[in-house]
Length: 283
Image 1 (cartoon, rainbow, N blue to C red):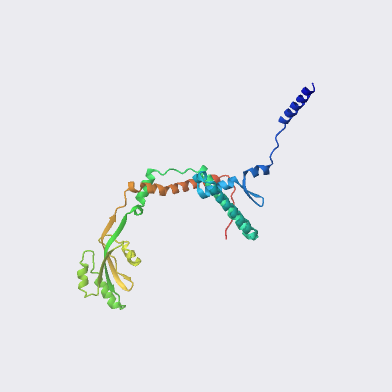
Image 2: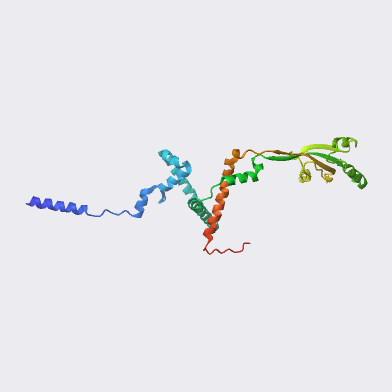
């Protein structure tokens, strides 16, 4: 009888123990379970280590990293924190304030990028957009336009009478005259130069004279670098660009950021609606 009473008491005690609630971990204890290191009590979490590994090794590198690699990344985090803490202690209030502004700016930059990824959808670049861009910018895809010209040059001696006589002589250099024969008749006083507007060494002054001229036209007489000059355009050459099919992918790629910018501007207008935004004059 006594034995049965003892067994009953033991059973009731065990049952009572099973019904006791488990002790609740404190917040610090839960965090401690997630810490991978501490510096003077300040914990470094497993999530912080994972982020550093992602930034260092990439998404796939996290899963392939050995324990040794993880340990080296953790060492870099510890060193980074030690340096940051040491430098922060010596910073002036002004420098700390500037640092906070940079942190706020970087935080907003990250949030902005995340917002754009989640909410902004750019209009796809259509075939019509690609073709229109190609038509308007052929020079970007290899088209070259240049003018072939003859140039007659006579020295200016500074004498009004002599220079005027030479200016009249230059009037004989017309679109259809033989410029080289005319120059030979002046016993070396006139110089004939042939070239084209695609030449790298052509001066800006000559390019300005060439610009309005078309094939078969002759310029007025211009005074350039101490010489009287006339220019005749003998031909206009066009080297065709690459075909649209050759550059279609490149054009589509170049237009994509423009479409995204348009979408961002549209989203910005929506965000500004019903918001009180005040702007003040800047110095």
